[in-house]
Length: 155
Image (cartoon, rainbow, N blue to C red; front, side, top):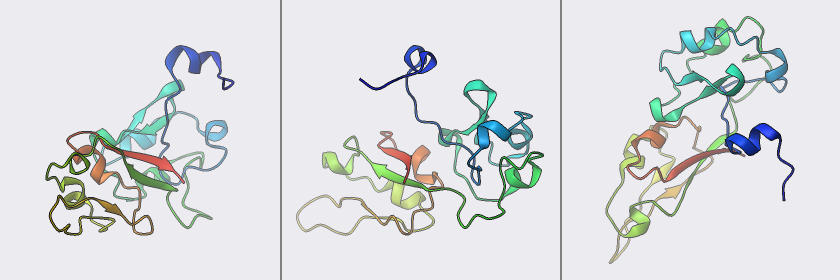
């Protein structure tokens, strides 16, 4: 059995996604002032466990506007010395309608980066193909999915 903290045991071991450009020592340097939450134009940064900011993709996608990094007074979120906002990528699980032989291309329609494609399948339903090189982890596909088949995870 994994070694879980008391809080993880009581609340469950959920996956937390921090804002883009979060620095490695985020929980040590973030003052929890919530300026990033207040200034996020997409309203996807929310107060999470311990009052630390985290991303809620059910509210929408990240447009990588950099506003959270611009307003962070402690540099816990900073674009300096980074080449990418984060190492998030999508994964489509088995609750996907297309994988259940139901026509659905919603996630592909919401992906501005063409990371999700549905190549035609002779005699069957087109299946989603994810190009991880093109996926930015923006989360646009997440809220759009009618069966919550899309998960974002750090690579």
